[in-house]
Length: 124
Ligand SMILES: [Cu+2]
Image (cartoon, rainbow, N blue to C red; front, top):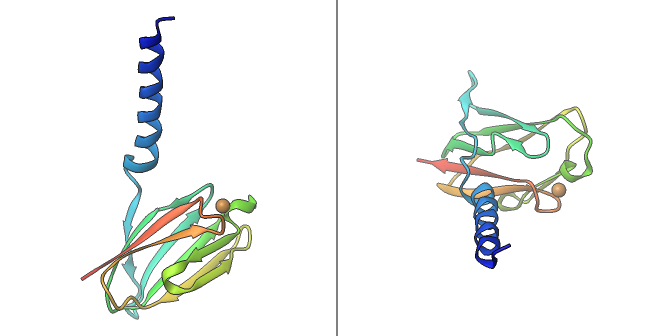
């Protein structure tokens, strides 16, 4: 095979991988408010986080409910570094994490191995 074709194919494969990991649209959701003003979001945990980007408002309490739908060891631990949270998520159960964002900005949450990733965006 022509080496140029091989090079072009490799470049296309690398571009596809980069697109998938860095540019592909991520599922994003805005929290909805409970009657007491808490911003609620349920996040499905199954080979990743869905939605993977959560938008909340600054200054109001947030309750993230992680609904773990698998027992794969990858997702068993949840780490939210900015909040000092490291929590075990029981398989097929819901685990709530509560906090009140006081500053705008964004921070990540990950599995214990730093493989699965999500992001919390604090607006306002
Ligand atoms: Cu993992």
